[in-house]
Image (cartoon, rainbow, N blue to C red; front, side, top):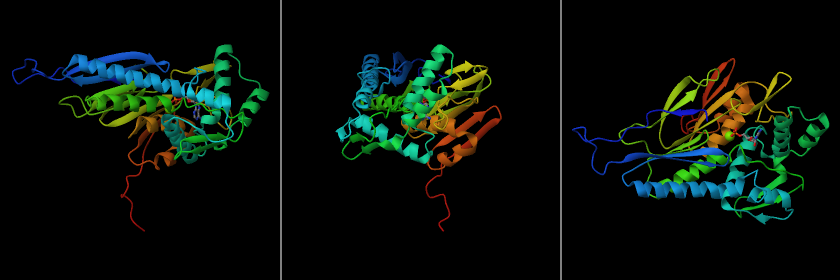
Length: 333
Ligand code: AMP
Ligand code: MG
């Protein structure tokens, strides 16, 4: 979603133009997981072995859906929120890692990235179904349940405790990027590092295709999804895109995106699109959502905290490009 992958390398040929023996070929696989089409592109010489690795990678995403899903009442996260344990409770390593990164992003973004918007996300989904905004009372009640700091996380022991029983957590802004990273890790571990995982717009990229400097990723223009605005050539990195291009509801002539401004409780109204390059998919995914809320005025300060991150924040007024600081690039006082 939001990405067009350019020519990712053809079947390699030998010097005389004939297909090289045992040459790595390009394979592509797709499966709907976490509510989006998950796509794997991988290079390998043995078709059967590549297919096996892709199946294992998809299985890992399926496993992670059982941890993070907001739609499956049996997911680890849904069961945890339903139980809202007041005493420390052991959670999976995957949930602990994603909650830890979420807490960092929550702190660094001044609460613009806030997984405790769960109740507001539910109101937004109802509004999309009914075409009506939630009443001020419902909005106020959902806003009152906000407060990610009411989740006490101990990353060392992988436990959480809830300070309030009505705290609801939604990790939809970060889980797909994490899942793309984990699927790529499976492909690498099975001997296929020249691979790409696309989790519906959250891309984790491994080593480049044979004889290519990187994977070509085209970023769409905000005003015209058919036109590519820029082409990126990347390897061993992740790219995420967030915005209101696909998921929004229009009520009384106002667009509300599926990304919530935690201050108002409503979906963002302005048109926007954010693209983030980061070392990991989880970070790219989380930052992209946070930058949608922060916008071009407040976003660059968050990006500055992350070495190796590059972001474009586009609104109808134009695009703001910002980068994280490279360690060691500052004059020592
Ligand atoms: P993404 O497509 O990665 O930008 O994630 C959007 C999803 O993140 C929404 O569908 C919600 O589940 C969740 N979400 C919405 N607003 C926020 C927010 N301000 N902070 C964290 N998660 C949010
Ligand atoms: Mg996101």
